[in-house]
Image 1 (tube, rainbow, N blue to C red):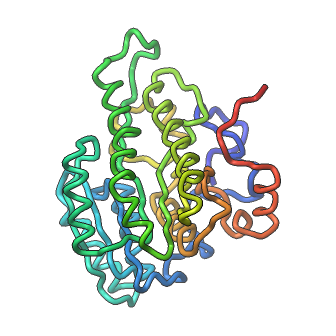
Image 2: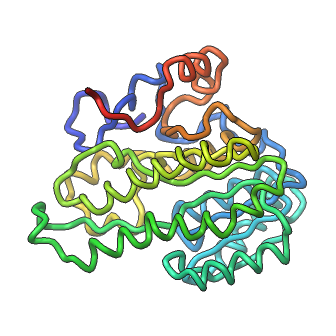
Image 3: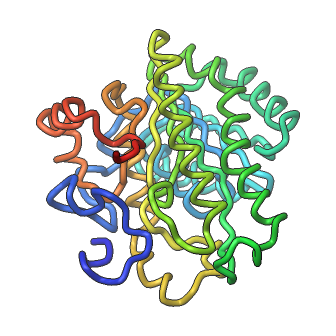
Length: 304
């Protein structure tokens, strides 16, 4: 499970340990992607050249997705190979894999990449806005931090997510699942000195999903944000050793949970925030659905 309740954890968020009775830090039978069937479905994952983005692509391959588009600025050949190997190992038909070079902070790059996806796939059932960046500033006070690194996080995490969403929405709205998931962070609800750019950008991204849910409700869009758990990635090299200790989740629990969440249309989640460590058997129950809707929970609000 995540770090035990009560231990030092500067990025503990609301309902981390209370939304469900059980929380997870690794994959488990309820979210096994081989129990889902994405035959005939198209999926797009940004930031898929390595780490958790690659893990997401592999999980959708194991679930039988027929078409998988992957994007990044870097090389995607290893991800494609792992997608095909995972599909084969799971007894699935080999998916059509489309590699697209996209810099999500560059509007021309985004538009050109999405055009290629449209030509090859026509529509996209599930979009995972995974691409992002974090800089762990050594200095906690704003005036001591590098303004270029601060701005870059805003440009990629929120403006880049906006650009990609802006371009690909028409393809999502042509599909049957019409599901768009943006990878936010528990940081959207925290104040951690030295992480102002990252946490503000993730707060804005989370709020963006609320706007999408309202603006496109009449067209059937399901848009929500997800905290991927505290997963150690390549970016952890800048991280303080004490902080690294609270990063206990595996890439697989994150990736497999996304497959579980998007396998059917979950209109009640649109505009809301989900923590992947929550137990999905309980969280996706009818009782929990009613609790969330009646309390209008899992949205950004101001306490007054």
